[in-house]
Length: 357
Image: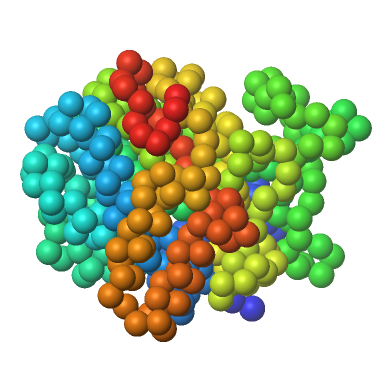
């Protein structure tokens, strides 16, 4: 039995069942044994591969979007360029390389990285050693100037809680122990004064809703900065506009696995409820765009033209490889439809291509 599993079992024995967000937080961010705190999980040798790791073209096209966003804001002479959860630093590195042809953009940008994992920070520090980056621990500390924020597969990794309704009773799914002291899921009745009952209108018989307090707080903080200082956000992640199903999933060695298996050794995520994020954005006095797929976003940003230019001088084997990477990014049965893209802007700003608001 792993040390982290022992810690979780002891915690349940002493304090009772863990909400899913507490379980996820412990598994992912325990200071010594947490998944993100002890190893690099990204890439072929890790448990998952993200779009920036598949092709440099992804980062190049995101970079073009960011420059366009900066121009839409009136080309401010100084602004915060913030990435949430930079992984190995691949995305921001590709963005920075591809935007060198826009020196005014780079001179105006203050590069900020929001990263909780010390392991990934060390990797980022090594990979981005020639770039003027600064790591921040608190989003509230960001200086008062226009902000352009972006993330790729960040919000799906935030801990969530899960609720359902059975026989008109609201239940929360938690992590408990069975008779053999093995970790299991179990439903527990929610107190009548819980905000999920007093504030939630979408919970009906048999449906499941997932909520992340951390997601709410991050969006609240960033949308306030958009509202007060002008700016925009680009969110790229797994998810949909609806959120009434169980989307909890574990990933190990690039394959789905039991969510409760091997605490600290498995990546734990859930699909992002973009409809909820849009509602949050509106409530925070900012404007969300219509949700589009990664395929639509990359296509409109010129992915096919860029790949053609990239492969014109390659031999047949190299062209076949590049075709496979392109298909992985845009095919409807791969990342093309599964991953969605949403923009959030401060009010009264012109729409940023390719979104309509």
